[in-house]
Amino acid sequence: MKVERDFVPTGSQTVGPYFHVGLVREGSDAGKLVAPGAKGEHIRLAIHVLDAEGAGVPDAMIELWQADSNGKYNHPDDPQDKTPDPAFRGYGRLPTDKNGALAFETVRPGRVPGIDGALQAPHINVHIFSRGILRHVSTRIYFAGDPANADDAILRLVPAARRDTLMARPDPQHPRTWTIAFRLCGEGETVFFDV
Amino acid sequence: MKSFDPIPEGSQPERRYPGYVSTQLRNPRQPLILMPQTLSELTGPVYGHGPIAETDNDLTRQGPGEPQGARIIVSGRVLDQGGKPLSGALVEVWQANAAGRYRHANDNHPAPLDPNFSGAGRTMTDSEGRYRFVSIKPGAYPWRNHYNAWRPAHIHFSLFGTSFLSRMVTQMYFPGDPLIPLDPVLHSISDEKARERLISKFDIETTIPEWALGYRFDIVLRGREATPFENKR
Image (cartoon, rainbow over all chains, first blue to last red; front, top):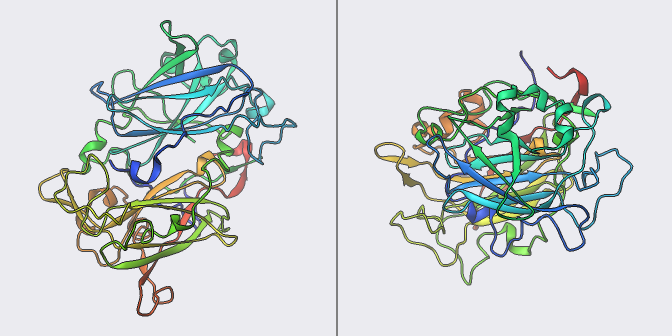
């Protein structure tokens, strides 16, 4: 397929190893999407980023974008007649620690419209950046056990055997904590999307 | 709702570019799964970065004194794929100091830190999509990708457009830098014109007499609403 455009998107380049200088400000609370009083089920979303050898990636950065608990995006192009939760902001950004781990404080999102008017299963949109990643990779987090997963049009695009890589699971050791590992490459590789 | 145009082949880097060794362990081997753009992809953060301070776009005025190095002005426009200027877009930058050293705990390059230079800046585009930073020209620095590997001088840019899909992180280079032809990070982009677009242009118009050299760097983000939602690819 050939696309002729006067304005071609600028080429992506890696964030490199020192992105903290510009993107992780001291005292930033960018890992916290909730303010007191945010509606819905408050969760701690613990994420582990792993490379092809299963080692934690200590210099990755994750960005999240999600709807509030009522399934509303805080964005002018969301046509739904709903008011965004003022105590929730939808966007988060965190660097991994030396073990490749990080955790967001957020809510379980509500369902949002998908293609052909069908609702999507609750999900969180994810970008991953890192040294060694020239063009950020994009994926989604779904919630294991959610009955809506069975009918989700995007999940259906994913071969059944790989859908598990997109599922956050409750941590039996820690109440209200959900965990997911992103395997960037190799065995059990996370599904990444071309959008 | 309309979906965004796909990205032309060759304008973006090869994810597992062999010349950049670290890509091999950190990028998918499986093909990406093509998916339609939904409300989730076509919306994105509008605010949420806190207030921008007056000196955030002037990296020479963030310390007690002036940083070492050649003062520069970097400015340009942020546009979408249809050529429409994007106003209110957040632009974040970070860079090494004039000696090629980042203010970062993991940077052990034996070059001096500059107490007057943090290397971080941010600003929002104006109503015509324009941004402007004052800074100093960053130095080249060594990395361990291959024998005698040096990154050309560059400034990292991070941008938010109108949606999560238009998110962009890139690097701006300087014209005439002899390290550019040797740099695997830039050469991960196969299209020569696309590489050239990452090299800023010296600009006498924004150069200020007796004060600072001007460089121009325009950025194009995904975001043109052209093709119907259902008919994507």
